[in-house]
Image 1 (spheres, one colour):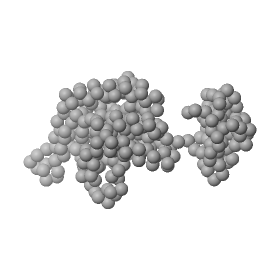
Image 2 (cartoon, rainbow, N blue to C red; image 1 turned 90 degrees about the vertical axis):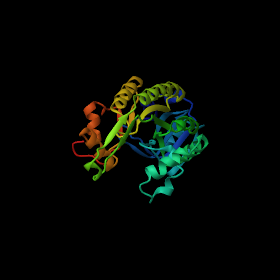
Image 3 (cartoon, rainbow, N blue to C red; image 1 turned 30 degrees about the vertical axis):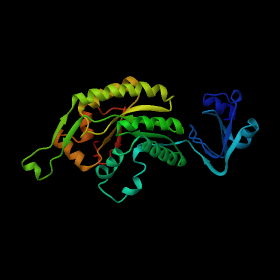
Image 4 (tube, rainbow, N blue to C red; image 1 turned 90 degrees about the horizontal axis):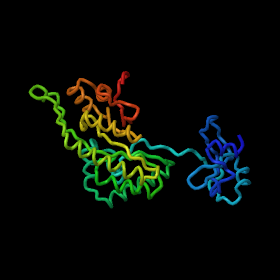
Length: 295
């Protein structure tokens, strides 16, 4: 395929586009033929790839374009980070050997951060991701006050982001082995909290589907079965169908979560979501490490 037909396949006529930059190196195209061009280049116009092919040919076609990259460089499609908590970027190195760290370190560390702290954390995280070749990431926020500064920093830095927001509407407790002699695991749902958070989520979607300019897409974050009601999973699934987006949920992450789900509902967490009709193609299962063959 020559350069012009390559550009047409990308949806743009290279001859009609002013090319501002040639990114040169070994180009891993990931096209239908899985071509690797050893001395190749990618031509960029604005925020679009308009030409891909042999570097010498592209230089001749676009002599005024800025050239970056070169020998011993690889040009690959941007990588995707499938799960992150941006507000935790500043404390990660201090928790490597300190288990259990989620409720003892990460959540308290998030709680004390103001909006300026979160902006710094987001800039650090996004810089690290982009330096590693990640151009698209997914964020699951856990604090309402952090959502706007993270979204604004996404737009400031240029990374692409699926930003999942949402709070919990369930309180639950797992009865340990010896507690089960006289007590039981329990949960308590809060319909008012669900209604309030759904209203806010709709406002967040309306704002950021426009302001995000296609680069930031709002999603829903359902923290997990121990923290989110069946009604929340079903209501948010209806919401994301309406907006054409999705849900991220932490699930099958640890033994306690699975034991709680079995004791309360008779199903493991993934099985429980399936039983209520909430395990759909719109849901991203985060972690999902402790799964059975059936799951």
